[in-house]
Image 1 (cartoon, one colour):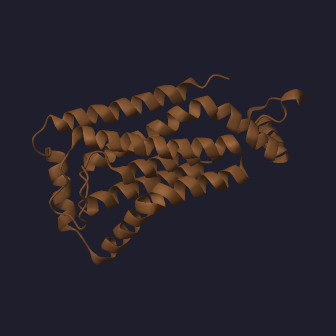
Image 2 (tube, helix red, strand yellow):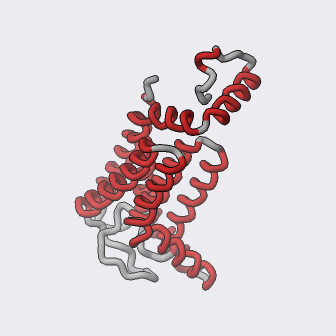
Length: 232
């Protein structure tokens, strides 16, 4: 089966992220949207939101994001799903982080002044937001359940909000990060989707057959016996 839509979606996301970076670089100062958003954030900071934002900062960066999530997640997925699933997860984590660092150095955007954390690296794009979006899309594609997509989207949005709340990123930095994380996850899904699907079927043949029967009942068709272990 040809998986064309992930290539198209992923390439479009990465192109939008780069385009956003170019537009930002051409402006000597933050645009009205970024400035207004940051002003509202600073005016509405509260102690309990400070704590929540610091928690998200810890979850989305440092050794957790660089080592624990990519390596630990890959090992867990290898055990639960198979080799190609683990490779996909680790590759998406690594490539997303690499692209973020390349674009940070390429655009060199200054961070906001009203910050709660002091960070020395350039602002665009947000690595925390990219990592959150990558996780949301990767796990959504692997598991394929609506609740995974919902939780993942909520996590990515909250992570993006926390970065602006802490004053370490402009709102458009987080948009660029989300585009990069999602784009990488979609592009890398294309060449491995079939292998990941077959790995899951091999490890869970009974559940795969049950899903096929549920799909048949829903759409009113009968899957041929030789295709009975194909997820729908």
